[in-house]
Image (cartoon, rainbow, N blue to C red; front, side, top):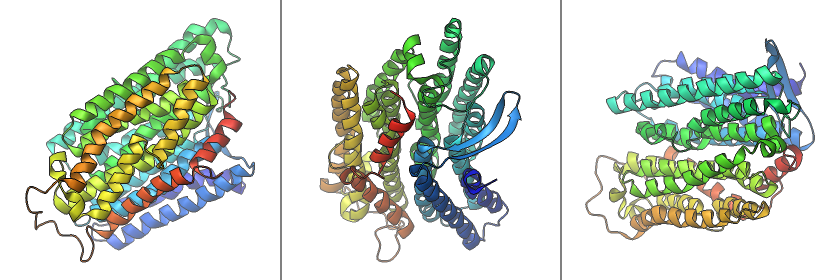
Length: 499
């Protein structure tokens, strides 16, 4: 095994091994636990950086091991997978630092960080999976590793949310397995191929391919929170805020959206999908989800639940961009995979800081919070403006390419979809910004939520929040950079999506 074969394995195990070691630590061994977390983060960032450089130079990172007759376990670092891995690595770093500050003084930290690390490993495995069998293995590991995080607090509400999460995701995983089984019977389980590997399947198998596509998209749509498969996500907001951030920006929902992109471009391919006319229903579901979830967000009075419905809406941008089967729309969907993660994690980081510092959970409690926590509220404002799509934030770049992509493929209604979506985003985000900066607090801030001396909140809550808010601005201002998310998305479409 040479170094190009080894790096995909190291990328997975750089978080898996620290996680397994953390399980064995006593609660009092905080320094060692923190050291293992940060060691894993550092190794993963270095490995991902080397792989990004290698792929840009044309190197191929791939390892394969026999698994089933007609199928193997394959880890493959192509441009698409490394885009998702890069997001996971950078946000794992930020979320790990944030979680250390958020959970300080609470019990069961070794259990939390152990499962947290395994969850990240599963996400990286999903990203690097080179075929559907490998994808399914890590996809289900992600379900199992995330459940203990959702129920971490052990309250009745948390346990109810965990049961809902398992019911949805296990059912989705079952449908995904059924779809993979149908395709395996038709073509085996070859590795993902740019343009899809099903073009060679005889035309008489069109009905079977249609059924398999419906099973795959429905199964993946559970984690991608496509309506009506989204019910588990708002309930899961009872989890600690680092878990909410992980669910919405890095791991579970992104795994579903990423899987849909893989199925569209590397399993079926644009040509097969057009021949079978399979994308029209998916486009309709994604467009409906964009609007309906935004309307539901408007009705929420709990801050994290409003952010949850915003995620349901924004994730469908990625699905819509992929399903339109045009190069500009594909770029928009892929870059939004990164941009949405950065912006949404910023908002959840802010929500967690408000909660830990001032006991704020509901929108009505945010009046004047910017006077008490100006840096955190500034970061929240940047994230909210980004989600609304206001320049020069990253969100503007995503929406511009998605709308232009609709025009490119002769679907001008897509422009109006994003106009309406932007107005709805403004309707449920801008009032929060107004409350935070301009409303007068109705009562004194609680005395029992004191931050560290000289800081508006705990440093390990504030610094990751400011970091991701800065990224939200830089990804918009420096969108033309060849190595930025937009440039890398254009590279993916040029190399791997023959459209």
